[in-house]
Structure formats: C-alpha cells, structure tokens
Image 1 (cartoon, protein in one colour):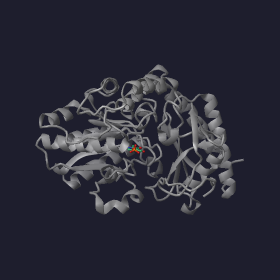
Image 2 (cartoon, rainbow, N blue to C red; image 1 turned 90 degrees about the vertical axis):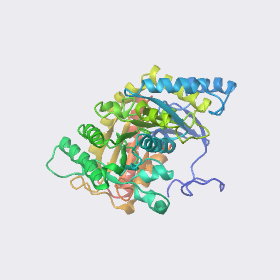
Image 3 (cartoon, rainbow, N blue to C red; image 1 turned 60 degrees about the vertical axis):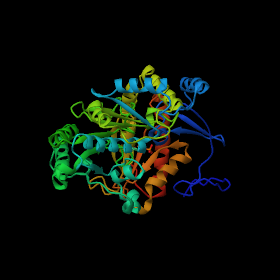
Length: 453
Ligand SMILES: Cc1ncc(COP(=O)(O)O)c(C=O)c1O
C-alpha cells in the first residue's frame, strides 16, 4: 500500500497492519498530524465530525460537566444532561417518537431498535414475529445482531454460523437500471420487493423492516426516488410491521434536514437509531428514539430487557447537548443543504473532467461519487485496480481525507464519500475540490485512465 508510515511496531491492532500518522489536534475542518501535516477532513472521519473539530463551546460544556460528575449508573441516579438531551432530541423527531434510549454507538443503537421491536411484538401478543428484513447492500453495524441485518457478504460471511441472518431485498440502485421506467416507477418497483419478501417469509413471522433512508457507506449515499419510502410505509402498515430508520449516519443534520426521514414526511418511522453526528465525535454516544406506542406496551409488560453500562452517561450526554446547541445556533442543517448543493456542483465538474466518474449522488453533505469503467454500462473498474484504496491514498498524500468502499455489495465497484463537516464554507469547498482534482489526476495517470481535454 502507498503512503507508508515510518513508526515503531504497535501493540494496537484494528482491521489490518496499515499504520497512520499520530494525530496531534483538530481545528474546524482540519486535523493536524504530529509531523506537522494539516489534513482537510473531507469525510468528517467516518461521517461523524459534523460540527468540526475542537469546538470551544462543546469542550467548555464537557469540562463543566466533568467538574460535577462523569459517571452515575442509571439504576442509581438520573442525570440532568441525559434528561434534557432526551427532551431536546424528542422535539426534533416526527410526531409520536418521544421515547429516547441512550447508547454509546451506532451498532448498539441498531441492536436496541431490533430488541425493542421484538419485545413490542411479544407484549402485543405477536410473539411469532422475529424476522427483520433489510436491504442489500446496507450497513447496520458490526455486532452480531446488527451484522445479521447488514447486507455486505464480505463482512458477514465468516460469522454466518454464529448468527441468524435476516432476509434481504435489493436497495433501490436505480442509477444502474437500464430500463424504460421513470425513477418514480422504479422506486415503486423496488418497494414492492419488500411486499414480495414479506409474503415469501410469511407475514405473521415478520417483525420489522430496517432501512437507511439515504444510504451510507455501503451504497455510497444512495437516495431513493420520492415514491420509495412512502410506499414502504404503506406496505409495513398493511402487514403490521414496524419501520425502523437507521439514521446513524443521516441523523443530526448531515443530509440538510435533521433526519433523513424529514425529506419524506409520508414515511414516518416507528423507531430511529442515531449516533455519529449526534455527539459529532466529542463523546461516544448514540440513541434509539421510538414511538411511545411501541415503548409503552413493553414497559407495561414488565420492562425492556436490554441495557448498556454507559447508557445515558452524563459526560456523553453533556457533549450531545452542546453539539445540538451548536447545530441549532449556527443553522448547520441549513448549511448542510446549501454547501451540499455547492459541493455537488464541484463534484459534477470533476465528473465532466474524469470520464471514469460514473455517478455523483447524495443529499446535503452526505455525498459520494462512484468510479466506473464505462458510463454506458456502468461496469465497475477492474477490481485489481483497487481504486477504492488507491484513490483514498492519492488524496491522503495530498492531505485530503475521503472515505471509500466497494460499491456492489462489497465485492466490486468503488465509491468515495465526500462528506466534510457541516461548518464548511465555499473556501473550504474550493480547497477540497482542488485537492480531489489533483488526486484524481494522479490516479488517472497512474492507471492510464482517460481524462477529458
Ligand atoms: C447506517 C449505520 N448504521 C450503523 C452503523 C454502526 O455504527 P458504529 O460503527 O458506531 O457501531 C453505521 C456505521 O458506519 C452506519 O453507517
């Protein structure tokens, strides 16, 4: 792999042996390495740092909470930051979703959603319901329950014997379809795949459908046609199935609305998962927010059999509250919409220059572009090119961070998330686009790929 780092061996390990420079500090849209390099955080880490790095107001609020208490176990004490954050979060949700359960991350949030759904079914006399249908490709987390929902064979296959994999339907990848239908008609066709799946599985066994309203890293910011989610809602209602929106990445303003769900009011979810931008990297925090009609029967029937030690941690919740203040005070949701349009224009200009960019997609500042060998057929680049690694490294060498995945179910295709912090301005976008342009030019030259004159 390019970009080697000359550092001594470490006791730490994650996915691979790849090393990265030591982080020194973060400021706004930039991260500084100990060696003095300044990186533009073009993906907000893993679509996390929505309000930018080193926000003084958030750090001050966290320090004030640290001076009071950093931990109080929820069975022994309630705490004011958790109470207030639950109330403020509920106010930003669709009607009825006003019961909040805090966790420490996205996978925990998703686990909580499906376990609450299951207990709701038991509490309402439908204990035969246990299947949670999801999409392919999709990403819902790495713990075994969330992984069973994740539609990415490369990630789940080794663990298949250890879990009960859940039924999948195709994600609405309309940009790959070569038929005569309109996108709206295609949206309805993809939604019908849920109905077919429910009938195939036996409606009485199906508990819920979980969906990223706008796709994240697994699909590269896939936006469904406007017809899709409202029809999904109708189908769930037809069979008494809960609709779960996994808003771990889309939530807290990233798409130019507080929730992805807000783009389609006719498709109100029953349960929502949040994390990432919710505390924006200042503390490990996530939440499940559920309709009271789902929660109350569970509490009436004896309680929710689920919980994590750090749930409702006062320090994490103080960070979450201060992040929410910053989002509201600086209209970062509006800025995500405005800067999202401006960034999309710049990405479209790069698409005009580089014929191997096949698609630019997304909403707000959840944007991505996909590389292809041929725009007509949308055939991916040869997998051996390892474009999803090589272009990220070319950008990294130019001190720009972007985030990539294999597009087609984790096996082929290459897409790149371009998702800077929601505080970015036009000058930041210019710098990002120029660095990306340089990286694409270097990648094209290294692989003999054509560029437009
Ligand atoms: C939509 C979605 N759900 C769940 C998760 C899992 O979150 P975490 O990595 O915090 O466990 C992610 C992470 O990328 C995600 O994008």
